[in-house]
Image (cartoon, rainbow, N blue to C red):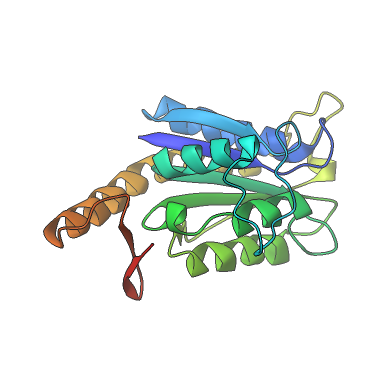
Length: 201
């Protein structure tokens, strides 16, 4: 199973990266192949509906990674109760690439429980016909030590369970999705399946 871990911190030492790494390490431990994509290191241009971006190198790269992934880890810092602009812009660039795939979502926060940020990501995923684990995680700034390690054992346990469950349930969802498409005679490059039915490119 191929997992793409995407994090949207706005500076290189952001805590979102640490959350993503904990989830990814657990997913790898349970048999997944994990690739990381740092939106700050490899930025996407601002999304526009009047451009196709076919010749934009970073857009082409991330679309290919999303298309090949069987599941996703999506982690954002929480800003004013919202996901970061990097994560929202990433989501805006994709649609069919998410259909029938499972997401583990988490947020790094200043002090809140991250409910608003995680809910926004969950809603966006659902509108792209993707699935999100029924639980989520958030780690507060006060729950990191001076070495940027998470000191809240319960938070670490939840993040690790997310990595495991992403692999366990992601395989089931992805296999059923592929089986349904095969029965309908549809290939990956022509259509995807969502909650509302089949939709073509």
